[in-house]
Image 1 (cartoon, helix red, strand yellow):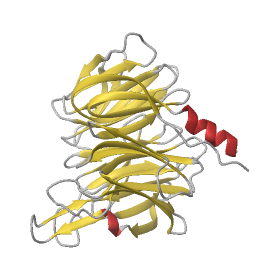
Image 2 (image 1 turned 90 degrees about the vertical axis):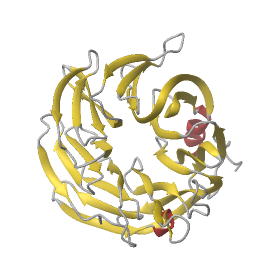
Image 3 (image 1 turned 30 degrees about the horizontal axis):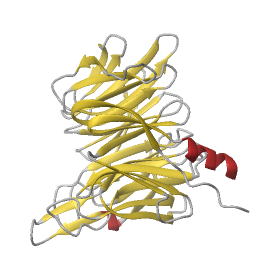
Length: 349
């Protein structure tokens, strides 16, 4: 049997923005992307519009927009929820920017990441206070608080809880921190169901800078829920920058067994990772000493099948309509075609 064609991701369009974008979500039904970051506002991009341009959706609350998710309230329409550098959560009506609801002290410190269950009922957040919190998405009521991630790294330095993801069935949430620890929580029973440490994501420099670096920057479940992708940077060899190899680990989280390592020599921290719809490929983006990068791997192969080098770092990835992938990061939002990736999956189905 002939080998399937290698996946290819090609640029379609881009919007040049101000500052660094940390948050991205797509209203797939309407073909609208929402994104925000260091400029303390949320902007929108109608992906099918010509000419390509973004518009101010609403001004924020004076703090970085660090995370963003979109839910649908029938029959009222979409709701955008933003997490902020000041520890707050805010619910918005995206058509007007009107604030529907807010939680002022959702976390003590930076809200690093948000995840929404597939049915839209649960919102899970993580922050610099090292807590995982589960909310009723419709009312903003706190349902569960999960504690257990250490506030300090093994050497006694302040840690950070970077990422959270919810399993496709909505039952579990995975969280990951700077020291490389991953925990998986049962959202219905309120219990810890899996735990491990991926130590290669963590670097401690006791001499030149005397600090802890690296960490797991993003976790994502595969479409069937069986695999957890863990992304970040390998061992940092030059502590003056992100000089270390791009790294993704794939885990059977139920058995707590690493299935594979996806790597590349490009010096970058991978800030986000996504599976394709059939789970046959993984796409990750980030940046570091070697500049920005977008990488694609076929499952079962350790080396990427495609590498796209960029000027600016990528912080977020999201699938748009059809075969298109959206990336957001330093001063840009970019739309990519991934038709060859999906065609490869179909040939393997």
